[in-house]
Image (cartoon, rainbow, N blue to C red; front, side, top):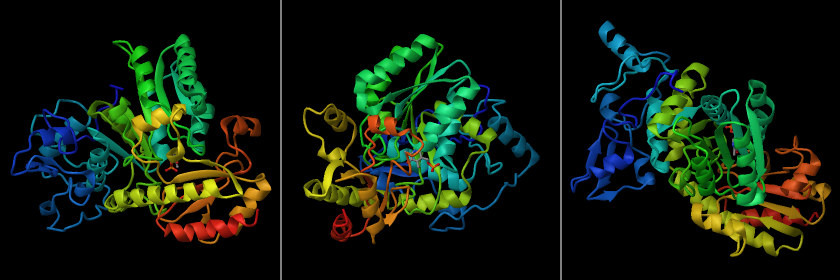
Length: 458
Ligand SMILES: *Cc1c(COP(=O)(O)O)cnc(C)c1O
């Protein structure tokens, strides 16, 4: 909210004067290539794809001794050239005056900004065509900071279920203690279920935020982002805008871009596909310069920003993001098709299997460009049979988390979703026989061989 200064946005990050980041840079393209402070965004009128920009965008070697790669700026604070410069930086950081058109907010202190975070934020923004991004030390840091930025006592939060366990806990146990009302709807209840929850919330007072997670974990049900944006518009007034946030961890940013579908904010656990190597915890929130300015204001005072080492690791990961996610989605499709035919498997939950006539099929076609790397399936039996499969896997590791280069399997009913009461689990479609698989970059034939020998134990 406006009481928070726009602490960490620098014109060279995304809010280029007179424009809005990537698109604006592309608009200015000429045949010799468009150039802005962050690099070359288009060549010969051709707008470069995100994967082409991940090695260079936002980094200027001449500021770092010519180093090809960005150094890790492992420093807590930055030296001002003069007291006058320090004063000017703080005036902008604390919103004491407007930035001049050509002014760059200087580096002050690593809780506000750090080169590794700023370059990473520029690069993340490219994928979602966002004006700005804010990076956090965890996905939960991003979700909690965003919630506390847009919700106030007396407001409602509407959210889809199932959501990530940590999100569920924050929304149902912590936010109500701060006077925030929460209303949820089942992803499987479609547009109608969403409408009922939004209307019930609106009847009680202003809605601060609609938070969606799609595809829903672990059932892969889809939530209609455009419909949520439409409902938010319907309940917005001049003074109060209802914001829609989408947790895009499962398919984004490569296969789903919620901002283009009308969402205001996109949230990630970067720990998963973006980090992609199961070795770092991080999160992000992206959107317009105005909204991310508010989120960054909260981040400065909550202290939930990521450190430079995390930023550097994620920049390395972004270089191979599309390669990894494409391979993972292709392998998952192969494995999901194979599971469908397997006699010990009673059901497969995979967006790639949606058929015309299923309400999720329309949603899939409108908002996803590939089915992704997450496959859930029911084994013939219950918990005991699912456990037998999990215990027999050799190449696939038994662990929670997802999106890494290695394949992981787990049991949602007793692990990631164990704090949901069993009756509710069943209503949401989370059965004791369900196994959730995150497909990695291994040879898919090797993965099938491992699954085949494990399924023999059923
Ligand atoms: C893991 C996850 C989170 C939480 O992210 P952390 O980085 O573990 O804090 C949030 N949402 C989804 C969908 C996730 O998978």
